[in-house]
Image (cartoon, rainbow, N blue to C red; front, side, top):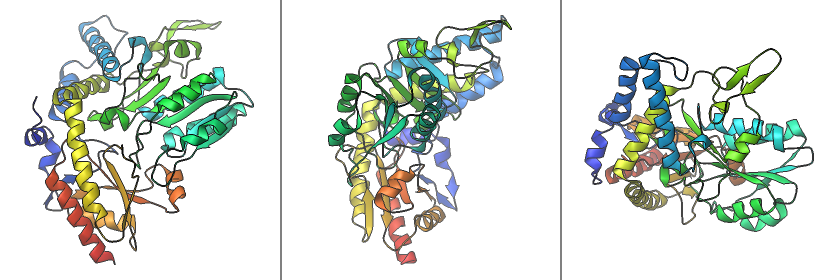
Length: 406
């Protein structure tokens, strides 16, 4: 499929609508991406024609839905680069995936006096679960800082990771700064002391991330809704030996082998961690979204988004008083900024009146705000469907907001 931006835009019905009597300009894909028609129609078809609970029924619909659900798991395995389908756990989202590891892994492997290292630029979902685990187990939480450009300070690794380090939690791509850190030295240092690495891939998987086995990730979490799929579906990848050694996170249906009041035994991977009714429709739609991305082409999407990122950075950076946060050379297509003398919410509200959607606030990354001594930022995040014209509309909108607010 050739990268035809006008054809791609026609694939996303919501882009045809107006907001405040203006064409919608959507630069909030980092919060949730819009859905192509193939994903929307697939979900509609499943609910109309195939809706039945999986793994438990002998009737036709249940069997067919189970087959599609497991095919979706295989699609995810290929897309993220896992070796085995049993290493792919389907969850309700990345937050659920990280919390699963924070509870089940720490129950087995974390002890009093151990430490966990997290980076300063993490989303709250890759901070708070580790704080909770550390408090529960009597462990220490250590922080790998970043510099003002948004680059992780790798020179601090030797002082942070030691023989009591059990896990390092780090993002593949910052949801606020756009930084795509080089994870190789972190993984090497962690593995050298016997620690494991939990990678937040929510932004990374959308922009060329993944390849989890090849890159040596121990755990990897992602959300479907940032990858043009539906909400309520996510993925946890874990190395088989770790998942098999960990206890279940939740008890209930589908994760059991045999239940008696004397003792319950558990189902093998991956069902061991999929208690209750899974989001089977969401899983199949996630596979459809992955297929869409592959048809357009991962590399073609990245080239398009990186081009727009360069233009957006240049256009916004030329506005007087505007500061961009996250200026590393290699970053995903996110531009976070503030304008001197304005409040991010005010800028965002004026842009909304112009039909432009951006994100304002702390972006669930308050430690990043604390680092820079601010309370919030404006964030424009680019998706496959954005255009050069929209970048210009955004820049002119920010200029207009600045004139009105100063």
